[in-house]
Each structure stands twice: as structure tokens, then as C-alpha cells.
Image 1: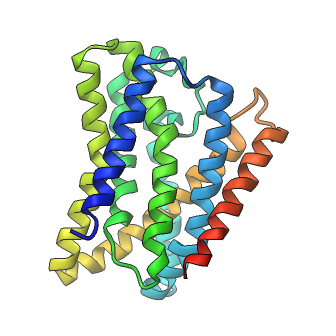
Image 2 (image 1 turned 90 degrees about the vertical axis):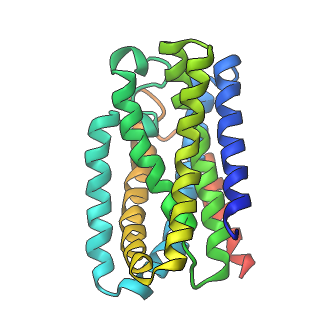
Image 3 (image 1 turned 90 degrees about the horizontal axis):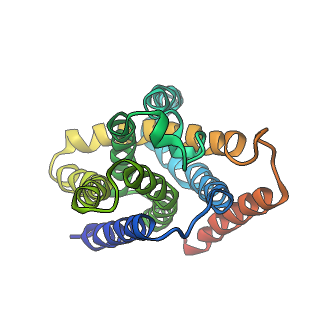
Length: 243
């Protein structure tokens, strides 16, 4: 019950943003790159401020190994998604170049990885809220990209909306399952601790790749992109006041 209402809210926000994207042209590539920069810096900062300290307490020196595994695991996932999750392929054109279901499969794995940390009970009380905000912020550009691809291939009909809803369910379901089984079984809770450390490594890869590969043609750090990054860092730092 602890994670039920946040998961429902996350589903509604994700699915609602996707529906807007399917039915309205409300985000262009320039706005998308700024949103990616902001969400990437926010996610990276929360990872360093909360997830890594939490995992270091639980995993000790092994945490470094799991972080590396997560970093390179995300590199492999990127081979399936072709970097769509961080805007590498200019989200308006991606669906025409790569099979939709191939991308959705990779992004689905990524969405499940997003959800697992949300269902864990952390030592620091502020970690739950801060991580929830980081993942929710990260889901916005992700679902816009997914909805844009689905619209390009499937149009605006029931099949497109159904695919969008199923994708929107993945992160909340992963969070709910992690919460339920982690609370009931100690072994699963221990395993989830390892998984979350791996996910933290994946977050580092995603966020840093956004900084260097999304944006201008030559991947330059424009003034707007720098401001978006700084805003993400500042807001993430402000969550420390929740302690």
C-alpha cells in the first residue's frame, strides 16, 4: 500500500503525457533536448546523492562492481534501442529507421529497471521521494519518444493507445512487485539491493550520455542545455532539505 498511490500517479502522468503526444504536436526537438538535459542531470544527481550512498551501505565494496555491471548493461540495452531513450536518433525520425517493436523491447527492459528502485525501502527517509521525482522526470521525455514512435507507425487509433498504455504500466508494475515481494521475502529484498545498485550504474550511463549525445548536431553544450543541467542539479540538491 505504501507505494500504491505513487505508482498510480506515475501511471496516470506517463500515460497522459503519451496521449498528449499522440494527439497533439506540443513538443519539438529543441524543447525535447532541453527536457532531456534537465531530466538527465536530475536523475544523475539523485543517483549520486541517494542511490549510491544507500547501496554502498548495503553492498560495501561490492557496490562498485555492480555499478560497473549496470553501466555496461545499459550500453548493451542501447544496442537494442539505438539510444532512443536519450534522444540520440532525433526522436521524430527514429521509428522510420528502426523496427518499432525492437525499440519497445529495449525500452521495456529499461522501464522495468526504472521501476524496481521505486519499490524498495531505503534507510534514508528522503530517498523514496527524491528517487520518485527523478524517475518521474525521466519518464516524461521517454514516454514522449515512445508515443512519437508509436504514432509514426500505428497512427492515433486504439492499437496505438493500447501499446502506449501497456508501456506506461511497466514501471509501476515493476515497482509494485518489488515492493510486495521485497517486503515478504528477505532473500528477494537482498537480491533487489543488488539489482538497484546495477540500476544505479545504468542511470549513470543514461544521464551522462544525454549530456554528450543529445542536443545540437555536434553534441555541443549550448547555453540552454547548460542552464537545464544546472537547474536539474539545483533542484536535486534541494531535496536534501527533506531530511
